[in-house]
Image (tube, rainbow, N blue to C red; front, side, top):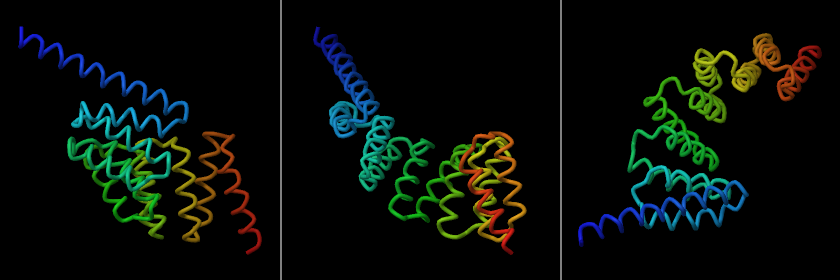
Length: 203
């Protein structure tokens, strides 16, 4: 009986952790991030080695602007599962928010080692490189993302922005045009194109 009671207790405990996680996710959807974290913490007391749960807590902390704490949660997730590409990306985003761009790039590189076809990681790496004013390198990242998904309008716009900063205006306009051809309602690309055309007409 002792063995079966132990098994029953184990499954009941796991079930309880699952219910805490579900409550946490529901609260997050309502924008109640502080309350969600409390439920994630309760679940972590039961399942401290669940990488996905550390990731969820990290996301909630990020939404509260607590980026350093979020980064610590992603570290925990990565200690448990070093091949968790999503946690590498999220850690990179958290590091970017506190201006640690070089470290963020290393995180995106880790995510890309796991999955070289991860368009989001290429985009994020490009953005971080732009923050460091490494525009040529950023364009290489955007091109990688566009090789995988040629219709990625946000990346087309970001590439246009990087080209603009290098003074390559004609190429930048082509990027904005391509983004607008895919999505004619892409407001930010329209603004960028009009602004750049004004600069070009004044030269």
